[in-house]
Image (cartoon, rainbow, N blue to C red; front, top):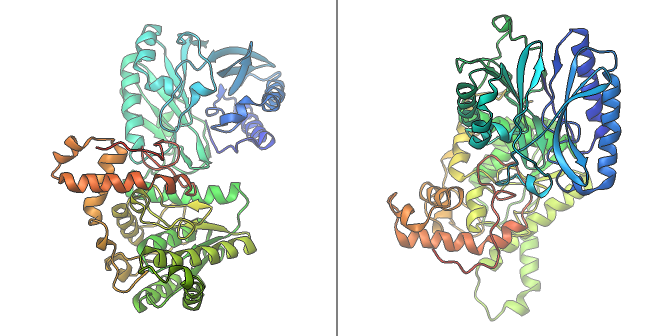
Length: 539
């Protein structure tokens, strides 16, 4: 089983990974080399599928892979976009001895959330074929086919001896428990064991977490690969008791933290960034981002920048310094009070007949954004935006200010989750960290009242409900799409729900301009949720 990352469009690199693994599989006399969904192209290829030259590359490397199987007994399983009479199919091929010995097309195409496969692929009738091997029936499934009750009902009569499911299933909080539940339903219906092979790696906002496993017909997982780690494993179904068991972390908060670390590591590596820059304010959001970045790429590659004004508290300065010290980071201090005053002075003739409001507050944030972008440009550094999902939902963020950045690390994390992640990291080490110390976050950052510190004595609760209330309402409105009648049943007042909905609706234009960030929920703000900017719908 090949649980390894592929890079979208890097055919040469992806081919070499398959070739190397296939040679090892042949030397070990394996029956199959199994690869994940669309490994050769990378997943998801999106509109590259509409390019003629993209298909020419697929055809070229398909021929190369067929060639390497000449005079070999090991079967190479390959999944590619394949053109047939002007249509494109998601095709699974079995290659052996220089020939294609079996083909099936994906017959259930997901078209929800981040999936848009009906835009690219065609289907015919629901696949009901199987592959005969050594007097055994092997039923191959491509990702969504395992989740489809219709597919299962039409295939139960096949009575296979083994299910092999290849996947590019993105990480979400608690996603593995869903996979396991659906796998059990298939095992129970087909009355046979199941190999679940999942992709690993990251593509833009998507995180593929691996966690491949074998489940026997008694619905017990006998073997599982780690999450967020690459592997090449020989899976002998007759000798599973002798395979070294991996220690698998199933703690939800721990897995979420590791997912964020993995996402940033992959994004920086795949897009050529060697270091990261973060605006460190002394608040818990930027502190968490700084901690994750240090775990992801190490202290020497993280640049925290502290930019105080007259409204910045001494406590925030101390917290930023102490966190940087704990993380072995060299903090850069750039006071911006003179810049703030100069800009307000230059705008004075335009603003003289107006009272001060959020305009003046946002100028501070935009000065910081300008400085951080300049540092990012000069050092060819990835600027990490530090806004969380709660803030982005209700517009408690400044466009061209704190929203500046190339990667919005916690944009799919609610504020209440931020505290859970920080507390977990203080007590535990993620497996994929490059910084092996505990108790990194100063206690004062965790306990102080959240504040943007854009004016004296400011607190987030001056204009927002408490985050415990706000996050639950946002979860019902955004993640679950509940109506007001249903949300009221959870004890929330109608006036509060309508107030939050208005803030969410009025902030849509900001989110359209926000940087991408790792998807970890079932309803992220990148591809999952598609609401119009001009929207007069009232709840």
